[in-house]
Amino acid sequence: MQHYDVAIIGGGHNSLVSASYLAKAGKKVLLLEKLDYLGGAATSSYTFEGIDAKLSRYSYLVSLLPKQIIDDLGLEIELAPRRYSSYTPSPTSTAGLLVDKVDQAETQKSFEKISGKTDLESWNQFYARTESIAKKLFPTVLEPLRKRSEIKSLLGAEYRDFIERPIGELIEGSFESDLVRGVVMTDALIGTFAPNRDAELDANRCFLYHVIDGFTKTRAQCKSLNRYCNHAISNSTTVLKRATQPASIACSMTRRHWISSCG
Ligand SMILES: Cc1cc2nc3c(=O)[nH]c(=O)nc-3n(C[C@H](O)[C@H](O)[C@H](O)COP(=O)(O)OP(=O)(O)OC[C@H]3O[C@@H](n4cnc5c(N)ncnc54)[C@H](O)[C@@H]3O)c2cc1C
Image 1 (cartoon, helix red, strand yellow):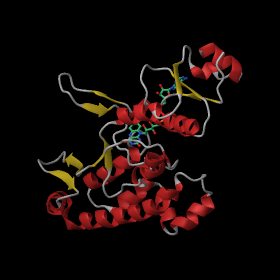
Image 2 (image 1 turned 90 degrees about the horizontal axis):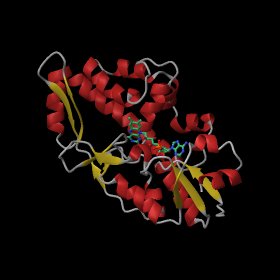
Image 3 (image 1 turned 90 degrees about the vertical axis):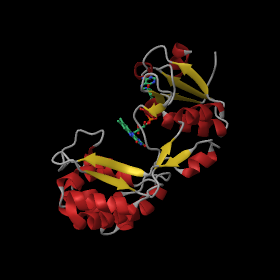
Protein backbone atom coordinates (compact mmCIF):
# COMPACT_ATOMS: atom_id res chain seq x y z
CA MET A 1 0.00 0.00 0.00
CA GLN A 2 1.25 3.47 -0.89
CA HIS A 3 1.78 6.01 1.87
CA TYR A 4 1.53 9.76 1.44
CA ASP A 5 2.45 12.70 3.64
CA VAL A 6 -0.39 14.88 2.39
CA ALA A 7 -3.62 14.33 0.51
CA ILE A 8 -5.21 17.17 -1.42
CA ILE A 9 -8.78 17.02 -2.62
CA GLY A 10 -9.49 18.76 -5.92
CA GLY A 11 -7.20 19.66 -8.79
CA GLY A 12 -7.98 23.35 -9.21
CA HIS A 13 -5.14 25.85 -9.50
CA ASN A 14 -4.95 26.40 -5.75
CA SER A 15 -4.50 22.66 -5.17
CA LEU A 16 -1.95 22.39 -7.97
CA VAL A 17 0.10 25.22 -6.46
CA SER A 18 -0.13 23.70 -2.97
CA ALA A 19 0.82 20.25 -4.28
CA SER A 20 3.78 21.70 -6.14
CA TYR A 21 5.10 23.57 -3.08
CA LEU A 22 4.67 20.48 -0.89
CA ALA A 23 6.41 18.27 -3.45
CA LYS A 24 9.23 20.79 -3.71
CA ALA A 25 9.56 20.58 0.08
CA GLY A 26 10.08 16.81 -0.26
CA LYS A 27 6.59 15.66 0.75
CA LYS A 28 4.85 12.83 -1.00
CA VAL A 29 1.49 14.17 -2.12
CA LEU A 30 -1.70 12.50 -3.26
CA LEU A 31 -3.93 14.78 -5.31
CA LEU A 32 -7.49 13.65 -6.01
CA GLU A 33 -9.56 15.17 -8.78
CA LYS A 34 -13.04 13.91 -9.58
CA LEU A 35 -13.08 15.21 -13.16
CA ASP A 36 -10.94 13.87 -15.98
CA TYR A 37 -9.05 17.15 -16.35
CA LEU A 38 -7.05 19.42 -14.07
CA GLY A 39 -7.31 23.13 -13.48
CA GLY A 40 -10.84 23.47 -12.06
CA ALA A 41 -12.45 26.78 -12.98
CA ALA A 42 -9.21 27.99 -14.53
CA THR A 43 -9.22 25.42 -17.33
CA SER A 44 -9.28 26.53 -20.95
CA SER A 45 -11.41 24.76 -23.53
CA TYR A 46 -12.61 24.99 -27.13
CA THR A 47 -15.73 27.10 -26.99
CA PHE A 48 -16.75 27.74 -30.59
CA GLU A 49 -17.20 24.78 -32.91
CA GLY A 50 -14.76 24.83 -35.79
CA ILE A 51 -12.62 27.61 -34.29
CA ASP A 52 -9.19 26.54 -33.12
CA ALA A 53 -9.03 28.84 -30.10
CA LYS A 54 -9.23 27.96 -26.45
CA LEU A 55 -10.91 30.22 -23.91
CA SER A 56 -11.08 29.99 -20.16
CA ARG A 57 -14.34 28.38 -19.06
CA TYR A 58 -14.68 30.73 -16.09
CA SER A 59 -11.59 32.60 -14.96
CA TYR A 60 -10.40 34.92 -17.66
CA LEU A 61 -7.91 37.11 -15.80
CA VAL A 62 -4.87 35.85 -13.95
CA SER A 63 -4.17 39.15 -12.32
CA LEU A 64 -4.16 37.61 -8.85
CA LEU A 65 -1.36 35.14 -9.61
CA PRO A 66 1.64 36.53 -7.71
CA LYS A 67 4.96 36.67 -9.56
CA GLN A 68 6.57 35.01 -6.56
CA ILE A 69 4.58 31.81 -7.23
CA ILE A 70 5.50 31.90 -10.94
CA ASP A 71 9.17 32.24 -9.97
CA ASP A 72 9.16 29.74 -7.08
CA LEU A 73 7.58 27.01 -9.19
CA GLY A 74 9.44 27.89 -12.38
CA LEU A 75 6.19 28.17 -14.33
CA GLU A 76 6.41 28.87 -18.02
CA ILE A 77 3.44 31.13 -18.32
CA GLU A 78 2.77 33.78 -20.90
CA LEU A 79 0.81 36.80 -19.77
CA ALA A 80 -0.60 39.28 -22.24
CA PRO A 81 -1.83 42.75 -21.35
CA ARG A 82 -5.46 43.49 -22.16
CA ARG A 83 -5.79 46.63 -24.25
CA TYR A 84 -9.55 47.06 -24.02
CA SER A 85 -10.97 47.06 -20.53
CA SER A 86 -14.51 46.94 -21.83
CA TYR A 87 -17.06 48.07 -24.39
CA THR A 88 -20.58 48.62 -23.16
CA PRO A 89 -23.35 49.45 -25.64
CA SER A 90 -25.82 52.08 -24.48
CA PRO A 91 -29.39 50.72 -24.34
CA THR A 92 -30.78 54.14 -25.29
CA SER A 93 -28.58 55.15 -28.24
CA THR A 94 -26.24 53.73 -30.85
CA ALA A 95 -23.21 54.91 -28.81
CA GLY A 96 -21.26 52.76 -26.40
CA LEU A 97 -18.67 53.21 -23.69
CA LEU A 98 -15.23 52.08 -24.83
CA VAL A 99 -12.42 51.92 -22.30
CA ASP A 100 -9.23 51.67 -24.33
CA LYS A 101 -6.11 51.70 -22.18
CA VAL A 102 -3.79 52.46 -25.06
CA ASP A 103 -5.72 55.18 -26.88
CA GLN A 104 -6.76 57.67 -24.20
CA ALA A 105 -8.26 60.00 -26.81
CA GLU A 106 -10.71 57.28 -27.93
CA THR A 107 -11.68 56.65 -24.32
CA GLN A 108 -12.23 60.35 -23.77
CA LYS A 109 -14.39 60.66 -26.91
CA SER A 110 -16.44 57.73 -25.80
CA PHE A 111 -16.99 59.14 -22.29
CA GLU A 112 -17.96 62.51 -23.72
CA LYS A 113 -20.65 60.91 -25.88
CA ILE A 114 -22.06 58.87 -23.03
CA SER A 115 -21.68 61.01 -19.95
CA GLY A 116 -19.77 64.23 -20.51
CA LYS A 117 -16.36 65.09 -19.10
CA THR A 118 -17.13 64.82 -15.41
CA ASP A 119 -17.42 61.05 -15.35
CA LEU A 120 -14.05 60.56 -17.05
CA GLU A 121 -12.40 62.70 -14.37
CA SER A 122 -14.27 60.76 -11.69
CA TRP A 123 -13.25 57.50 -13.37
CA ASN A 124 -9.57 58.46 -13.28
CA GLN A 125 -9.80 59.56 -9.65
CA PHE A 126 -11.72 56.44 -8.64
CA TYR A 127 -9.21 54.08 -10.24
CA ALA A 128 -6.26 56.04 -8.85
CA ARG A 129 -7.74 55.22 -5.45
CA THR A 130 -8.13 51.50 -6.23
CA GLU A 131 -4.58 51.45 -7.56
CA SER A 132 -3.24 52.90 -4.34
CA ILE A 133 -5.23 50.26 -2.38
CA ALA A 134 -3.84 47.54 -4.67
CA LYS A 135 -0.27 48.63 -4.04
CA LYS A 136 -0.82 48.23 -0.30
CA LEU A 137 -3.01 45.11 -0.23
CA PHE A 138 -1.56 42.90 -2.96
CA PRO A 139 1.83 42.34 -1.27
CA THR A 140 -0.07 40.90 1.74
CA VAL A 141 -1.79 38.06 -0.17
CA LEU A 142 1.01 35.57 0.40
CA GLU A 143 1.35 36.46 4.07
CA PRO A 144 -0.68 35.08 6.98
CA LEU A 145 -4.04 36.87 6.96
CA ARG A 146 -3.70 40.23 8.66
CA LYS A 147 -6.08 41.44 11.35
CA ARG A 148 -8.87 43.88 10.54
CA SER A 149 -7.16 46.54 12.67
CA GLU A 150 -3.90 46.10 10.73
CA ILE A 151 -5.63 46.47 7.35
CA LYS A 152 -7.50 49.49 8.68
CA SER A 153 -4.29 51.27 9.54
CA LEU A 154 -2.66 50.13 6.28
CA LEU A 155 -5.42 51.62 4.12
CA GLY A 156 -6.17 54.68 6.25
CA ALA A 157 -9.10 56.75 4.97
CA GLU A 158 -9.85 54.36 2.07
CA TYR A 159 -10.82 51.59 4.50
CA ARG A 160 -14.25 53.01 5.20
CA ASP A 161 -15.24 53.70 1.58
CA PHE A 162 -13.98 50.49 0.01
CA ILE A 163 -14.28 47.95 2.81
CA GLU A 164 -16.84 49.00 5.41
CA ARG A 165 -19.44 50.80 3.33
CA PRO A 166 -21.48 49.10 0.54
CA ILE A 167 -19.40 49.63 -2.59
CA GLY A 168 -22.57 50.38 -4.60
CA GLU A 169 -23.09 53.54 -2.53
CA LEU A 170 -19.59 54.76 -3.30
CA ILE A 171 -19.99 54.00 -7.01
CA GLU A 172 -23.39 55.69 -7.19
CA GLY A 173 -22.03 58.79 -5.50
CA SER A 174 -18.89 58.90 -7.66
CA PHE A 175 -20.43 58.79 -11.17
CA GLU A 176 -23.35 60.56 -12.84
CA SER A 177 -24.11 58.18 -15.70
CA ASP A 178 -25.94 54.96 -14.92
CA LEU A 179 -24.04 53.27 -17.72
CA VAL A 180 -20.68 54.22 -16.22
CA ARG A 181 -21.91 53.14 -12.78
CA GLY A 182 -22.93 49.80 -14.29
CA VAL A 183 -19.51 49.26 -15.86
CA VAL A 184 -17.76 49.94 -12.53
CA MET A 185 -20.28 47.76 -10.65
CA THR A 186 -19.43 44.80 -12.89
CA ASP A 187 -16.33 44.09 -10.85
CA ALA A 188 -18.46 44.09 -7.69
CA LEU A 189 -21.28 41.86 -8.93
CA ILE A 190 -19.85 39.39 -11.44
CA GLY A 191 -20.26 35.84 -10.21
CA THR A 192 -22.30 36.94 -7.17
CA PHE A 193 -26.03 37.35 -6.66
CA ALA A 194 -25.43 40.49 -4.59
CA PRO A 195 -27.64 43.56 -4.94
CA ASN A 196 -26.15 46.91 -5.98
CA ARG A 197 -26.33 48.25 -2.44
CA ASP A 198 -25.14 45.19 -0.59
CA ALA A 199 -25.30 45.58 3.17
CA GLU A 200 -23.65 42.14 3.53
CA LEU A 201 -20.58 43.57 1.72
CA ASP A 202 -20.16 40.50 -0.54
CA ALA A 203 -20.06 42.95 -3.45
CA ASN A 204 -17.16 44.76 -1.76
CA ARG A 205 -15.24 41.49 -1.46
CA CYS A 206 -15.85 40.66 -5.10
CA PHE A 207 -14.82 44.18 -6.11
CA LEU A 208 -11.60 44.07 -4.11
CA TYR A 209 -10.59 40.72 -5.63
CA HIS A 210 -10.90 42.35 -9.03
CA VAL A 211 -8.93 45.47 -8.25
CA ILE A 212 -6.20 44.45 -5.80
CA ASP A 213 -4.26 42.50 -8.39
CA GLY A 214 -0.56 42.71 -9.06
CA PHE A 215 -1.09 43.89 -12.63
CA THR A 216 -3.50 46.76 -12.08
CA LYS A 217 -2.18 48.81 -14.96
CA THR A 218 -1.80 46.03 -17.48
CA ARG A 219 -4.36 43.49 -16.45
CA ALA A 220 -3.12 40.21 -17.69
CA GLN A 221 -4.78 37.44 -19.57
CA CYS A 222 -3.32 33.99 -19.55
CA LYS A 223 -2.63 32.54 -22.96
CA SER A 224 -2.40 29.01 -21.77
CA LEU A 225 -3.75 28.09 -18.37
CA ASN A 226 -3.67 24.42 -19.28
CA ARG A 227 0.03 24.66 -19.81
CA TYR A 228 0.39 26.32 -16.41
CA CYS A 229 -1.56 23.53 -14.76
CA ASN A 230 0.26 20.73 -16.54
CA HIS A 231 3.59 22.35 -15.82
CA ALA A 232 2.75 22.74 -12.14
CA ILE A 233 2.09 19.03 -11.95
CA SER A 234 4.90 17.72 -14.10
CA ASN A 235 7.39 19.90 -12.28
CA SER A 236 6.63 18.20 -9.01
CA THR A 237 6.52 14.64 -7.77
CA THR A 238 2.80 15.01 -7.19
CA VAL A 239 0.80 11.83 -7.47
CA LEU A 240 -2.40 12.32 -9.40
CA LYS A 241 -5.35 10.00 -9.08
CA ARG A 242 -8.94 10.20 -10.04
CA ALA A 243 -11.24 9.78 -7.07
CA THR A 244 -13.57 6.84 -7.44
CA GLN A 245 -16.04 8.43 -5.06
CA PRO A 246 -16.77 11.98 -3.98
CA ALA A 247 -13.91 13.05 -1.75
CA SER A 248 -16.31 14.88 0.52
CA ILE A 249 -17.66 11.50 1.60
CA ALA A 250 -14.26 9.88 1.69
CA CYS A 251 -12.90 12.71 3.82
CA SER A 252 -14.97 11.68 6.77
CA MET A 253 -12.92 8.49 6.98
CA THR A 254 -9.51 8.35 8.55
CA ARG A 255 -6.65 9.39 6.30
CA ARG A 256 -5.45 5.81 6.02
CA HIS A 257 -8.82 4.45 5.01
CA TRP A 258 -9.39 7.25 2.59
CA ILE A 259 -6.18 6.64 0.71
CA SER A 260 -6.77 2.94 0.50
CA SER A 261 -10.37 3.46 -0.57
CA CYS A 262 -9.30 5.65 -3.46
CA GLY A 263 -6.04 3.96 -4.27
C1 LIG B 1 -17.74 32.87 -13.44
C2 LIG B 1 -16.44 32.99 -12.69
C3 LIG B 1 -15.47 33.86 -13.16
C4 LIG B 1 -14.26 33.99 -12.50
N1 LIG B 1 -13.32 34.82 -13.00
C5 LIG B 1 -12.13 34.91 -12.41
C6 LIG B 1 -11.09 35.67 -12.99
O1 LIG B 1 -11.26 36.25 -14.05
N2 LIG B 1 -9.88 35.73 -12.36
C7 LIG B 1 -9.66 35.06 -11.18
O2 LIG B 1 -8.55 35.15 -10.63
N3 LIG B 1 -10.65 34.33 -10.59
C8 LIG B 1 -11.86 34.23 -11.20
N4 LIG B 1 -12.83 33.46 -10.64
C9 LIG B 1 -12.55 32.78 -9.39
C10 LIG B 1 -11.68 31.57 -9.65
O3 LIG B 1 -12.24 30.80 -10.69
C11 LIG B 1 -11.59 30.74 -8.39
O4 LIG B 1 -11.19 31.58 -7.33
C12 LIG B 1 -10.57 29.65 -8.57
O5 LIG B 1 -10.86 28.87 -9.70
C13 LIG B 1 -10.53 28.81 -7.34
O6 LIG B 1 -9.56 27.82 -7.58
P1 LIG B 1 -9.54 26.55 -6.69
O7 LIG B 1 -8.35 25.76 -7.10
O8 LIG B 1 -9.62 26.94 -5.26
O9 LIG B 1 -10.92 25.80 -7.00
P2 LIG B 1 -11.58 25.32 -8.36
O10 LIG B 1 -10.99 25.94 -9.57
O11 LIG B 1 -13.06 25.45 -8.14
O12 LIG B 1 -11.20 23.78 -8.42
C14 LIG B 1 -11.76 22.83 -7.52
C15 LIG B 1 -11.47 21.45 -8.10
O13 LIG B 1 -11.82 20.50 -7.12
C16 LIG B 1 -12.54 19.45 -7.75
N5 LIG B 1 -13.38 18.85 -6.73
C17 LIG B 1 -14.41 19.42 -6.09
N6 LIG B 1 -14.94 18.57 -5.21
C18 LIG B 1 -14.23 17.42 -5.31
C19 LIG B 1 -14.32 16.17 -4.63
N7 LIG B 1 -15.25 15.96 -3.69
N8 LIG B 1 -13.42 15.21 -4.96
C20 LIG B 1 -12.48 15.43 -5.92
N9 LIG B 1 -12.36 16.60 -6.59
C21 LIG B 1 -13.23 17.58 -6.27
C22 LIG B 1 -13.31 20.12 -8.85
O14 LIG B 1 -13.68 19.22 -9.86
C23 LIG B 1 -12.29 21.16 -9.34
O15 LIG B 1 -11.46 20.64 -10.36
C24 LIG B 1 -14.03 33.27 -11.30
C25 LIG B 1 -15.00 32.38 -10.83
C26 LIG B 1 -16.18 32.23 -11.52
C27 LIG B 1 -17.19 31.24 -11.01
